[in-house]
Each structure stands twice: as C-alpha cells, then as structure tokens.
Length: 315
Image (cartoon, rainbow, N blue to C red; front, side, top):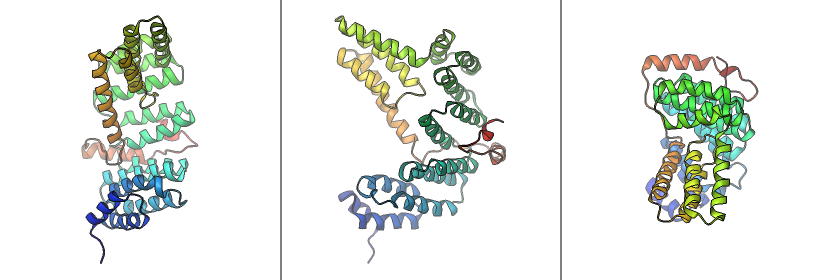
C-alpha cells in the first residue's frame, strides 16, 4: 500500500537524503502538480543525492512536464524560472537557463524574476552592458513612479560603478529624481557620481578611514564609519549579499552599546530574509490589468533573451 504524502514528508524530514523516500515523494509532487514543493525537495536532497549526474536533468524534465500542463500565465512563468534555476545550479548550462528565463518573461512579463536571474548570470561573466540593457527591458513593464525610479537607480549604478560612465549615471539619476524627488539614496548617488566617484570607491574609502580610526584607538569613530559603509553596501547593486550585514556586525563589535548599529543589524537580517523569500520561484508581482498584460506579452513576443545577441534590449 502506497504511503500517504504526509507520511512521506515526515519520513523525509526524519531521514533527509534517503533515496527511496526522495523518489517516492518526488513522484507524488509531480502527480499533484506541486512544483514548488518539488523544487524544495531537490534543494534539500542536493547534498546527499546530487552526486548522480542525472539529478538536475531529472528536475528539469519533471518541471518541463508540469509547465506544459500549466494553464495560468503566472504559474507557467514561475515554473520556467525554476527550470532556468535548475539548469544553472544543477546542470551548469547557462545557455539553456537563459532560454528558460526568456520563455518565462514571454509567459508572464508581470514578474521580472526571470530578468533578475539573467542579470545574475551576466554579473558573473562581467557583461555589464547586457545587465544595463536588461534593466532597460524591466523599465518597460514598470508603470508606477517608485518601481520605475528603483530600476533607474539600479541602471545608474551599473553605468557609474560597473561601466565607469559617471556622467551617464547622473543623467539617469536625474530622471529617477523626477519620479521620487525626496530619495536620500538618489541624493547620495548624485553627489558621488557628479564628483566622478563610484559607490565602491566610497565604501573602500570609509573602510580605510575605519581601519585608521581603530588603529588610533578610536573604536566609536571606526564603528560609525563602518556603519556608513554598511549603509552604502546595503544599497549597492553589485554588493555581495551579506557584505552590508558583515560590516554592521563588525561595527557593533567595536561599539557594543551603539543602539543605532544594533537596529541596523536587525533591519539587515530582516531584509535578507525577505530577499531570500522573494528569490523563490513562488514569487509574483502584483497583477496588472488585462490591457497591460496583452501589450507586454505582445511586446515580449518580439524579443529574445539570447547570450549571443542584444536584439531583445535595443527597442
């Protein structure tokens, strides 16, 4: 007699990595169409079971079958992002990952997770022009002021920090400022880029000053400088995921009684949890009107995310 799915889940939690339980549970998730649970199962089993060369291929094949039967555009788009992620992390095939992210954007342009994933590939290869162009594509499907301003700020950072075109960065930020005129981040970036300085350079300067203050026996001053660097890192598009948190933690070791720094750490930890959650394939942006959906899909249908061309981004 087949085990109940709850019994299988309990058996997996009790003994994660058991190949028989894994296969039985994966099969049930496929039958039920529970693709999110399937992805989580493969993630949990990776350490013990991913030595099998077919591990990632099995996930891709199962997700493709589920995607073929998905009726809702949002659902189809989410599964396609998961397929792209599987190609990236388990099969190590960036080209196929890009194809899946392209298909996801076509299926549901309202969720730009696929563009985030594509940018992560280009960031690892240092292709900053394509990162910039992907942000331009994202700008097309952002219809309100704050989301558009956030994309423009990210574009400005790519131009100013990565491509080293600070004049171009200023022009983009001036457009963002019109949408959100009271943004402290935009004001900070404008000051930096108008002086020909990048965010990364300012962070490095603050770190040098903090080291000097610490060596001079001024831990509170060093902590304040590290906190300032942490604030910039938290908003720097190219920063490592935990770099801002590490700087804030270092600041607190130098000034343990500083309540402001402790509060920063709390915010960063909370933010990191939200970002991790938003990176899951279950994510979706707010629903758009049917008219906007049709326009976005029609626009996306003429585009291509391809690692060898930039055609999709030039319009």
